[in-house]
Amino acid sequence: MQTTFIFVHGAFGSPAELAPAAPYLESRGHSVINVDLPSERPDATLDDYADAVCRAMERTSGRRILVAHSAGGATVLLVASRITVDRLVFAAAVVPVPGQSIYEAVGPDTQAAIMSVSVDNGDGTRSFDFEQLASLAPPDQREAYLAFLRTTQRKQGMRAVNQPWPGTGIPDVPRSYILCTEDKIIPPERQRAFAASLGGPPIEIASEHSVFAMKPQELARILDSLAG
Image 1 (cartoon, helix red, strand yellow):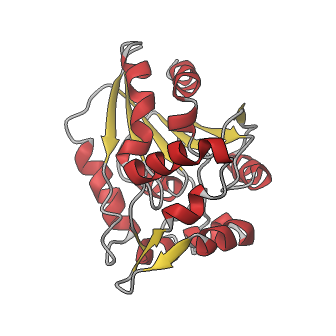
Image 2 (cartoon, rainbow, N blue to C red; image 1 turned 45 degrees about the horizontal axis):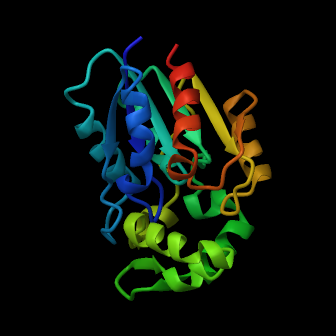
Image 3 (spheres, rainbow, N blue to C red; image 1 turned 45 degrees about the vertical axis):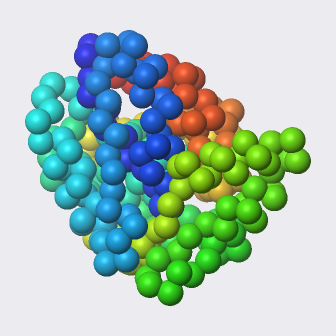
């Protein structure tokens, strides 16, 4: 069945990080909308993020599946409470509870990791220290990883990350969780708890956090299977 997949990126990320998975879905007859959130704006809220997704979906019809990466989970839950979607997919994504911020939802390990490799820009945003991040990769992979970071990551407005999640709960929509077993950003055990909160077991994939870029073909196969 032809489906429109709507990709929603996470904190510090961009559509470029999710783009590698799109051609594999399009080759299977699906459409992909890769939403650009206003995440660089220091004043932007999660409602602003949800507005951006809703606008991007205005001209879509037929079966629609929202696919969230990382912090994007907080956004797709809000979108699904506003407009009709056929499924929510969380790929290594947060599932906050009402009143809980994204920062709180990821837990202390991820909080510490993000703070240690990012800098305060003094304008309500933070940016990754690319050189420091790349130094954590194996020596033979550092240059490639540095190029990846420069291409796909950008500054992040912290208001949306720190605000209490404004939703009222998980919408009554079919949902799936894709757990990245090699994730060093959001630990697999934290992801397993997010999956449990959705009411079902996760689908596991052997990938780092950036699954759209690291395992795009395998991810596309999973998403295609969820389209039914």
